Image (cartoon, rainbow, N blue to C red):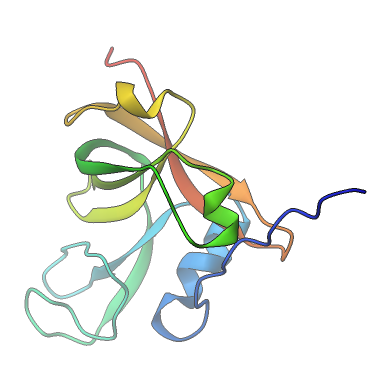
Length: 140
């Protein structure tokens, strides 16, 4: 008897975050940026959290950053994630400034450390979405 793999829970891809998910499908990480004060920010919303302006554009991000903080999840009741434990959930401080919540993959979860340099990668889903995740990179 074959065992069916649990489907990944999918994010909300409409509304203010729609450009983010569209770019992710194309292998690009983008951030909302205020045209008035020129500050990139995260999470997507119709107004700048720094100055309140509603003139927002989407700009390409480098995809590089550092682990700001993290936790290792060692148990989960969600079927998809239960099959992936242990895994890392981290706040990534992008070089552009904003903090982005994601996963760190491609290394032993116990090797993840605050300050670890990381770069974005995209995990494809069966639903045709690409989920931005991060992998360790050399500090050089």
